Length: 84
Image 1: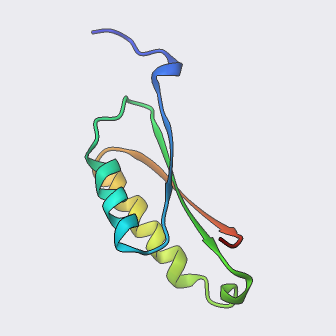
Image 2: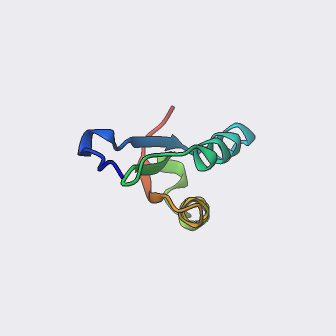
């Protein structure tokens, strides 16, 4: 077995806006054979007008991370104030 170097790991930024395209990207990322130790950040930006009710956004991010973790991947949610 060949040991992988730290450089062989990937850091993947997966944008999640709740669209069908984001869902397709999540499925693709979940199905690819990433090297062990690769990390996926699932990112969602929200507008200041949405700041009063972040629970649904956090829930969706956590569900996406849980799905990726079930695939054996390291996934972390990131919710940021911003706009597109």
